[in-house]
Every structure is written in C-alpha cells, then in structure tokens.
Length: 291
Image (cartoon, rainbow, N blue to C red; front, side, top):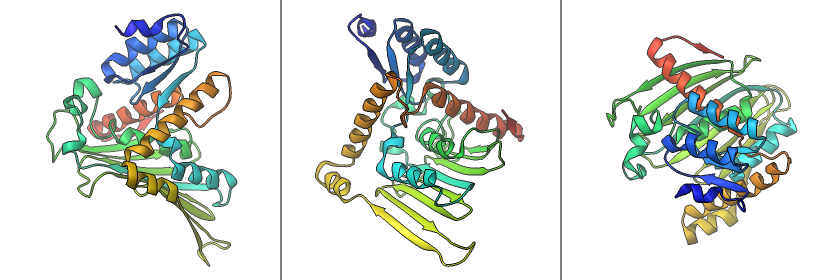
C-alpha cells in the first residue's frame, strides 16, 4: 500500500512508478505535508504536471523532478564554465540523446502511449530537453518534428527533432532517438560569443574551447574523470547513475531547507513535458508553438 509512505514520521517521498500514477501519488504526498521527488517525466501530459505543481504550491512543500543528469560531473563542469563567462554570451546550443531501443526498453510500458504520453522525447530525450533548457533559459517558441519509421509503436516516435528559441533570440536544436545503433549516448554543446563547452557521456567528458578574437587562435581544455571511469570498469556504468542519484537526493534535502541547488524543480519537470508536447503539436500542425 503506497499510502503507508505518507505516515507522520516520513518527511520526504520518492515517486518512482510508471507516469500514470504520478499525479495521484505526488498530489497525495504533498497534501500530507511531504516533500516530493518524482521520477521523470513528471507526468503523462501538461495538465497532470500542472496538478502536481499546484499541489506543491498550495502545500508550500518542495517538489523536485528526477533529472539526475544535472549531477553528472561533465554537466557540472560545463555549467561551471558557462557561468564563469569564459565562453562569452550565449549564442546557440546543440544537444542529443539516443539509445538503440531493444534491450533498452526495460518495460513494455516505456513505449506505450497511454503510459508515457509519447516516445523517445519523453523517455531518454526528456533528460536532454531539461539540460538544454538548463543552459538556454526559458523557452518562448518551439518548432518540432517526429518520425515513426523504425519501431512502429503507436503514437510513440522513434526520433524527435526540435528547435527552441528563448526570449533573447538564442536557438537550441536537439534530437532524441530510439535508433542510436552505436549504443546509449548523450551530449550537449553550448556556444557563446567567445567559445564553446561540450559535455558528453559515455565516456564522461567535458571540453571547452576559447577564442581571444573571434575565429582566431582557439585554445581547448579537456576534463576527464578518471576515478569515475575506473569505478565504471569495476562496477559497471550503473555506478555513475547511482552516484548521480545520491547527489540528487542530497540536493533535495538541502532544497527542502530553502537552499538553492542544481536540482530540477517541479516547475522544471512541467516545462520539459510542456515543451515535449509542443514539439508533438508542431509536428502535427507544421506550425511553431509559442509560449
């Protein structure tokens, strides 16, 4: 009985069920005065996301979304460089997340439209969508396309492509894929007026290139994470994921005390789902979606 987790001596609840249960469980936990960490995607659609976010506001409790990639060392290094201003003012972003399907479909409901609300973009792609917004800022306009040429799951795209524009006119292009035949991988490249920074996995790597004059004399730094790579060889790639979850949980505990952390909020989770569904709507209509 999941409601047993809402007893008085519990302060924080983790919701890691299939998405159709998120709205009911998160709302109930928040109304009982619990802080909540909900696995991604926050819900199946923007309406259910809004229900959860509103419940958090009414309860004055912290709601976090499980975007653990924010805690990958390469992403944290890229964000540090970006925040330092060393690559100048943001110009554009390119990002990608893909896996080959097959054994990566850990449960049949992962490609069930009624459960997930979509395909690749709300599965693995929701992580890269969040990371793109993490650097881009708020999204004002979305153009999108999705394709169904490979797996033929009803309503669940194999590939989604999106262009996002922020209010300052900066553009991000991203792709989420279920036909990345080389195996799981993701990367994000953030370009500024004086350089760029890239974060990717696997392997865990961050790289930055700087220019003193536009187009001249580029200098590149590479950031490796050897301890992590050794741990992965000894304990498998799951070690990296587990460490990101630990960091995420610790950040949530601090955020619940009012501290500012990199952890994604419920609002971040809602915006990711809203943008994903805007990509779907734009793919159907052939028009941009404005926020």
